[in-house]
Length: 265
Image (cartoon, rainbow, N blue to C red; front, top):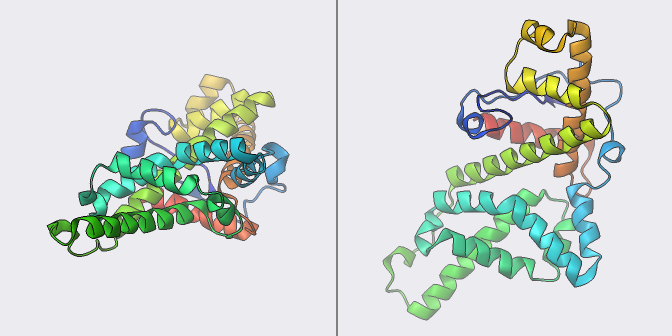
């Protein structure tokens, strides 16, 4: 794994202050030199990845499709809002209406998520591409009904690289938050809740070894073992959340590295 979980910033685990802080960072380790002997496979810890979760939902007919749509909206609604308000599309109207309209249109289609499942693409790229297509469709419909009189629609909006970066950053932050919640639960379910607290106090709250020795009564060797165990739970959760069809371990490592660099910029 190229990136080892280690985010810093005030306000607790990925609190608002930490999200805004330029000090938010992820520590890098060598994938060969520091990889533990066994990194848990996806199903060792979390039986349902985001990919398999959506796949199973879609196999449950109309009810499952509604659940899958709700899941996707819960994860990607805010990132798409961020993209819209930072892009040149924002002159089209209320962002909330357009994002909701996009989800209502695309997620109601029988094959939309099924096509993503077979696409071998990350869901974040699939959705941002589909959202842009939806916005261009909105522009063409508006031109057809209103003619060329509306000045801001005389030419189609240009691409918005900065807005796309903010979209991907918002996605990355959401995925990290979810992975932290899943890892905390996995630790609690395995009677390793203190391991998680140790990791959070060290890498999120920035407590030194000496401070943690006093707080938890641990020697440095034991502290490192506990932090590594909890870190493995986090990494397994994050890998599961980003997994897509056909993704190799190297693909997942590269995707996580990309997400972490987006957050750090």
